[in-house]
Image (cartoon, rainbow, N blue to C red; front, side, top):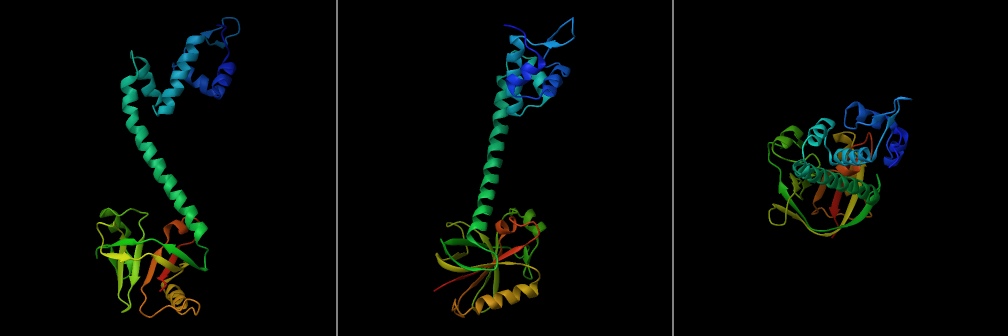
Length: 243
C-alpha cells in the first residue's frame, strides 16, 4: 500500500489533523518520517492501529488506558470491563431522554394560565414523612437524605375539610391514597409567593365554568417538568377531578 500523509489519514477517519498529531505525540501512532521533508508518512499498519485507537476511545477508554491496553497481547479484558460503563451510560441517556420527553409533553399539554381538561389515569400516592413535609413546605435536603429523587412530584392534597396532606407517586401495590382516573380541570400557574398562590387557588375553585363542588379535593404540586421548560419560572399545577 502507498503511504499516506497526516492530512489524508485525518480525512480517511474524518478527524482533525491535530488529533492525528496528538496520537503521534503520545506514541500511540509511530509513523515513518520522510528524511527529505520531515513529514509523517503512514502505512497500512498505522491505519489499522488508528482504527483500534478510535474504537477504544469511543468505548470510553482514556489515552493512558489505551497505551496500557496496546502493550498487551489482547484487548478483550478491557472490552469486558467497558461493557459495564456502556450499560451505565445507556441507562443515563435513557433516563435523560425520558426527562426531555416529559418536559416536551408537559409543555405541549398545558399552557401557562389556561384552564384545560385533561384525562388522567389512576394515580397511586404515598404519604411523605413529617421529616420532609413541614408547615406546607418540602425540606429538599431531608428528602434527598431519605432517598427521594430530585424529579419526584410532591402532591399537596387538600380535602373537603381543608386538611392538607403531602404525597409522592407510589405503586399500585404500595400506596396510601388513590387519585381516581377521569377528567381533571388543570391549570398551570407561575408561582411568585404563597399569597399569590392562595389567590390563584381561590379563583380556580370559584371559576363558574368548572362548577367545582365544595366536596372536591384540590390537588396542588410543583410541575417540575413544566418548570424545566422555563429559565426563570417555577410552575405550579392546580387540579380538581370533575364529577
